[in-house]
Length: 75
Figure 1 (cartoon, rainbow, N blue to C red):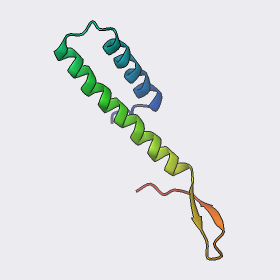
Figure 2: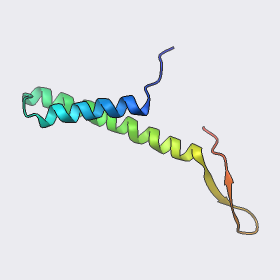
Figure 3: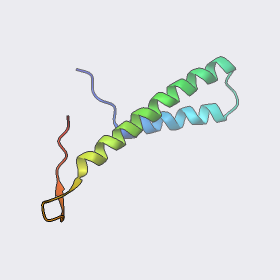
């Protein structure tokens, strides 16, 4: 089974792509490929952050309208 990429690894890859694109040394074709790869890494990071935030806690109201913490159950 393939090991899942960590947030830190994906973020480091995204930062590397950004540096390469900002260097101005890429031809248009390579820049487009890097842009696509960067968008993929960005989406992966954002999805992971969203999932992690939901896992940490969900606030719900009980019958008396008081807030209580409920663990997030991954679907």
